[in-house]
Length: 305
Image (cartoon, rainbow, N blue to C red; front, side, top):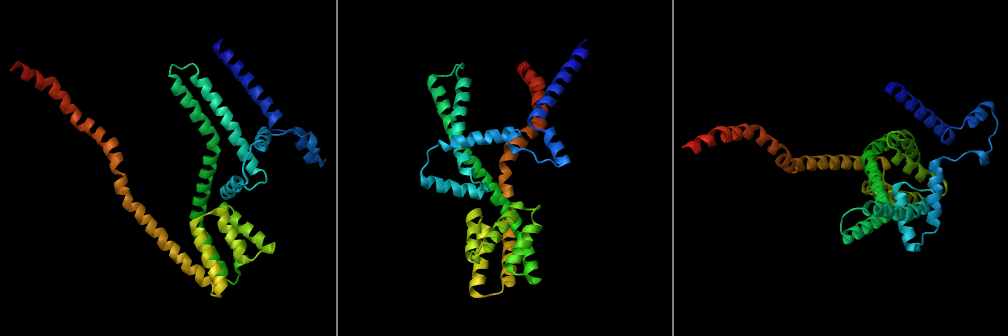
């Protein structure tokens, strides 16, 4: 009987999940229209729940007041994080407003029935307000750092590819286009930035201006050094291939020194894990049996004496 009830519950849950998934994420009519070649009416297509939430957050962002100075700073941060849509700033402000209200409400519901002091409850709600309001800023900061690390990690490969392309006879612009194509899968951050720089060059901007915009969009220090080398080579008329090769050698030496520095710090960093995690277990294994025998045998013998 229990087995039958379990099977019935499983079937009901699976059918409900299938129906909900079909209604929300799958559109059979759209698939049939695509196969038959019928143009679908976009007004009748259902919206994905994530798009509905995105539009809701953007509407909240329209009501969020902000100074023009703060908007320019946040727009720059969003650009460095890779959020370059026209509504990225509105979505950020909407998320700040939405989480600034929802997180305190959740915290209030959690601490309402607790036995803590009233002052601690108020502090918890205030901390929830701060976490909900400034949480999106921290998320943007984390995404920016991750993107910069990805650019820094893939820049040596991009630089080697640029050296090969320039020495084979391509110009700097064509070399950047080729690098963006080759690294589209391995390192999409660098590929995207080089592609945007090439679009700016095609739009009529000067090469130095497009390269400076490249550094402003990313904020990566290694990319700033590379752009400085390229601008100087373009200004003074030196060979781009020689400049890129010397900078590649410099980056290899710097990467080797950074690896040696991390290896030298490893011994010091291992002191605390060894002291607090490994040594106690060693003491328990080695000294524990001896301590048990002392308590069990030696102490009774001393009490008898």
